[in-house]
Image (cartoon, rainbow, N blue to C red; front, side, top):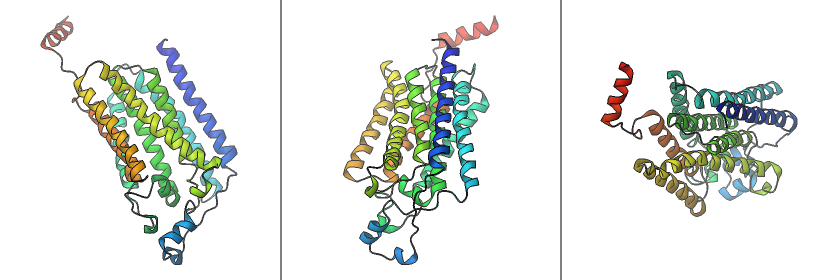
Length: 306
């Protein structure tokens, strides 16, 4: 398939995603009124069991302070999603990765890493348990809804652009990787707009959509990186083979911790931290770059002379 056709397919995919998201927000979320309860000082003194029983899934700040704020968010977030199609064209099909593109990708990678780390350690009522083992990113979103949205946008944007940057830097044109990364990074926009509903409301469209899109982001976002690593693994590149094993081991470790310890923002962040570190090393250092042989260097010098 020609590059021009693939450009149009990817742009069309993101245009469709942005349109569906905009319609969903305008039609469904514009009338959806999620009930919220903010605990009083007296509530904060309740025993842990009573507190959790009363507020599980309901410890909630108002989603929007006014209709104007809601519609501004709809317009801005839809525009950001449309921008992903432009990022695809600018990164994957650039004749050469420009300094501006490099700075942009590096900046949002660092910003994403810094923000999700800071967000994961925000304060939360101690009645819900230990911040390292009991409080999830979604639970934090109930208390800090706008920080949760920023968390989603930065996590999505940084993983998406830097996965594409990694592909372009290594001249890898895996269509499956681009598509799964696109779908995964789009899914988180649903997650951050639909608050966690709590265990009492598990079998509802709200909670299922929140959990399902969070899992889609986690697995498809990781899949885009793994597809590239496996490509390099098959080429018997030792450094990439080690990186593949380490990254997959971290994902397995996260699953084990989720089963044995329970879900928490700290555990959820483990694969994100490793992914950020790996993308930074691949994209912005020469650690994984193959060193050219002296024969190739001489050949390039001769080409420049002629």
